[in-house]
Length: 153
Image (tube, rainbow, N blue to C red):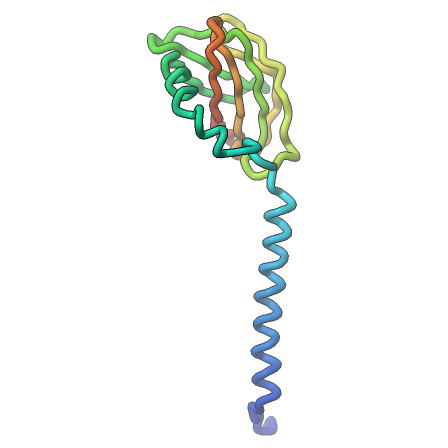
């Protein structure tokens, strides 16, 4: 038989300290990972950006555009439609394709308008992707939207 174990103050202190060491270590690893993968700021000064937000939103909503994205057959298809469901050709279109959680997979697709939608050759791995697009209408009205794209395996 094993000798009777007696829990003394030193053993209790060692257990207590070990538990706190594990908790602090995990917190440090998580904090480091969060800071390391942070993609950056959206705007330099959020207060200044908020001053014109309502005006920009109203102007963008007046376009009535609906944006949808899909990936199939090695193509990334970005459809922009007007309130009547007709395809829209934007004056300009800039987009960044990437993951929501990090920037290492970010890329800039080369979209071309085929009369119905904007199409780019992109092979995407399964998972959630974001398309952060900035466009202008032919009249020069700015339009910005983050389009979520889920790619199935």
